[in-house]
Image (cartoon, rainbow, N blue to C red; front, side, top):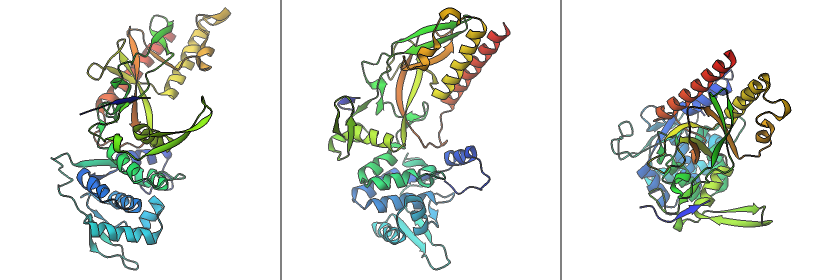
Length: 375
């Protein structure tokens, strides 16, 4: 039960485009047994052992068990030198997490079998954790997420990051809101208002304040009362270094490493909770800025900006409001909620609902923009 709430790649062709690389990262995944990952963590191995396990799992084929990746791949993707990487492979076999079917020899690839208690191809027990290959392989020119976590040298952090992939809300494409979101905070009003209407068809909404994320200290995900994760940061308001612990040390460290990010979704109504949240679309800053440019150009063409006009668009661009978004005027009451999502995600079980909602929203806004311009 939930308790106390706190507020607060794969190798690609040289000709492959960045979009193709991103798509490859998104579409390819590997599987780790939730039960085995838990068991590995509980025996308190080295972080090298846990990282090596992930690299070997990433190198599996269609059966999600057989891999020929070895110490060289571990060095390439996790930054662990070949000698300690080789020791970690030996440890994993001693622990019973892999079986060596063919030992590594000069000019010969090894063959390892990752052990599963349940068939990962069927997973009727819900034991699979689906992890995008980009977590291990990264993208060209940057350290992989796995290597960034190895650099932190925090076993608990790596364990929990991978575990997060087993706690995803597939409809919203975010980390389960029961773990972290503004929906679990009773004081969650976002105070939005319409500041401009164009031709009775499109509204420009602003929100001075958006509910901040809240997180459970203890949930089905983890009991952070027992966590040893800490994070030091500079508090600008108090002008001094401070330290945070537990759930916020965990989440903010992952944000600092670029592994998770905030996600803001617009919902119908004045307020909502976990059971009444009714999403319409996600606020994407680049998309909303582009729509703001279009709306300002239309207002300018219609002479609405002359002599002060109906709205000083510059106020929004100067950051007077925390958030802004454009929506069809048919929506009379809207508010925003904050969630957290993984930066590296797989399309395994991806949200068709959220994609359809986003597509519907963008098509409707584009239709109304064209209608306004035709008039």
